[in-house]
Length: 144
Image (tube, rainbow, N blue to C red):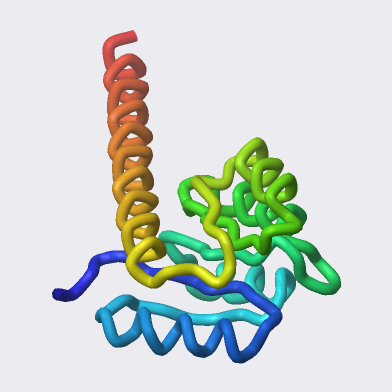
């Protein structure tokens, strides 16, 4: 089954990232990978993605900084935080900054697929709501 959404995996662990990319590509997901926050932001500028799966703990720009920048530049992009057991607090903090949800590493592929689909549905709802609000604002302008 072809899925309609695009995903960016951001994780500094090359093996983990490449394995996740291969497993999701087999499931017909439009997928790309970045090794850190700066690279992810550059990729999002070139080719925005519907969903970003973002590691909390990375060298340089960490997950929370990256999340904040993504949400500022691409407010409709949903972000799923990835965390190890020691970083649950950081994942919860990410949700305060607008992350859709979080998953523990290593993550079960079926759990990840379920979260990706949920995140995409949330994004679609936000897009529809935004479009509806724009149409209502234009109608009000025309009547005044």
